Amino acid sequence: MVDHTHQDIDAATGTPTTGHEWDGIKELNTPLPRWWLWLFYACIVWAVGYWVFYPAIPLPGGHTPGILGWTSRGAVNGDVQELVRQRAEFVGKIEKASLQEISADPKLAEFARAYGRSAFGNNCAPCHGSGGQGAVGYPNLAGDRWLWGGSLDQIAATITHGARTGDPEGHDPAGAAGMPAWSKMGLDATQIEQVSDYVVALHNGAATDALPGKKIFAENCAACHGEDAKGNPEMGAPNLTSKSKWLYGSDKATIVQTVANGRAGQMPAWGAKLDPATIKSLAIFVHSLGGGK
Image (cartoon, rainbow, N blue to C red; front, side):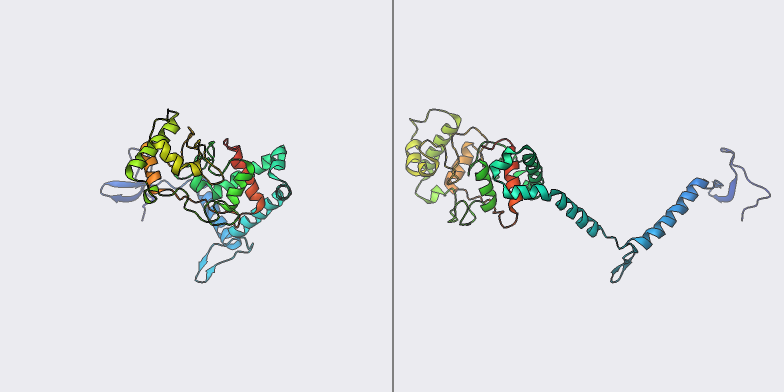
């Protein structure tokens, strides 16, 4: 009990003490400021009101629903429905228009790029990167090296049907393995080295006529990549003379590995998962990244 008839004053601060002392340390009698106390009491009242009006108290079978019946899920659904309503006019126009008509309409094209950017982030960025820059085994969509063609229609077809998925309407409907493993198709280690040297020379723009790999290339690789090695978008065969970043790398060791063991990357078919307006918007957005043809 504090003796109020004789208050002990702390010599260092001039503040009365409560009379409590521990190991020579005295407790100062400094009450909390009134404004702080009122704010604290107001927070308590606000918390009680929150428990009453909003879902807050956990129960064995769930939680208290609150007088307002508000839920975060319901709020999100409401926002989504409002967004759908706002987008409905432009989405309807995109569904009816061709890719060329969308691209020619400034307002529609602007909406399609924004809509496509959002869809890209949700569906495509995990593989191709947030800016479409790609990675090893995942094409750079901002570059000019397109395995299946970089026109609006070709991009939309690739998104819709994928590549090497077995989709009868898409690329490689037979589900072919893509780049075959030539070590299992008749080429020995020396021939693989020679044709790899030839491909490296093509990529670097060096002279190739005297290289022994030129004949091997003509007999085995030209059927897909073309006699000039410029590639074939119908087959997903890349342009081997391109200076752009290659899908798996353009160094000698990587090319040897590719020739020897093959490549069989797949692009999933999004046609069954995304609506036509979203696919068209994605095509417009991807085409706008800078590498579209």
